[in-house]
Length: 263
Length: 192
Image (cartoon, rainbow over the protein chains, first blue to last red):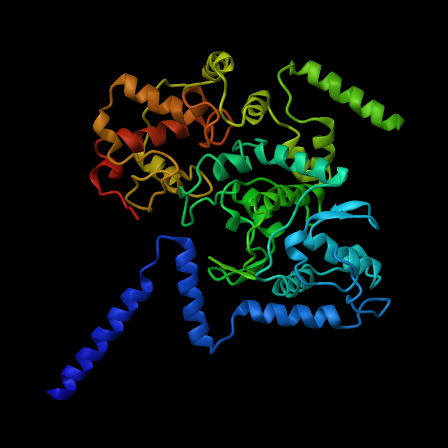
């Protein structure tokens, strides 16, 4: 009899904990924190994003490409090899490429210019891992993106214009959801407030626990288009950089939470 | 450079031929930016229609002087099923309403007994309570066919106007919403 009741108790406890686990928080930030804690407990203190950071560090420091050099001399805007806080200062204008570049495109530029890779040889997964490594060195730093150069000012204006543009068979436009329907849900997640919530842009690159993927802002933007059956702009292309510039300026002053951990 | 002029000239002629003299949102600089995003991307974005341009220019809030003519122009585009019936087969409408790649209605509206609804659009729970009068049928059909005729620049797709659904398919969705026998009206809506 005693054994029976112990068994019943154990089953009840298991069911109860299942119910608690299955209950999803309404606030996506709280829900992500909960998921992060659970994952840390299960894995003994390691997050999937730590593995990307580790992989990115190895790629960054290894002598690779036709020129067999590392990326350690890459200039992300604070001088060659200066990596702390760079993620929160991009996109910005670079004199060597005469182009405004974001994190992804700058990594690619250095892989081409320093290591001698041809553009078609660059693996997207490598760029993402390196972005995660750089992100880990910018955690806790403020977002400081101020368009001062004429090229930056111009691209910011175009990014804003693109943000409000509507086109395609579903009349798609970024602002239609991320300004007009902020906080409302179509599906699981509420639309983030790009103009007023500084957290919207300050947690990229991020690990997505719902589908086990590592994403940079470029992946996020491309998915926004694809979700509404629109063709997405190419990786490393100017529309992505312009939208990122526009959004990061809105996040100015926010403390970066990197790599992000989101649904 | 010569090629550029020829292409520009062709585009202008094309624009004139299709009678597109409406407002334009895409400046030459924005056009170059979009083109840098790749062929498929720019093909879709650069084909922006003049009504989409108006919503872009005014950031989805049309001023009073634009509003009247805009709504009138949107109303003019609405077409009806050949047999004139605005209520079709609710079973077919159910499939459209609840399929992501078709109507995707449930993502934004509460009311479906099959899917948890979103709150981007108003709740449609027990929509059939409105009855099936001609006025209710017509309003429901027209909002789905071209929602901009009632809610200018809103996020909802203009299903008929943009060719996402045929008039008969829209009538099926109307039936799903209005038919008293439809599961939409007989079964409880799923909510978060």
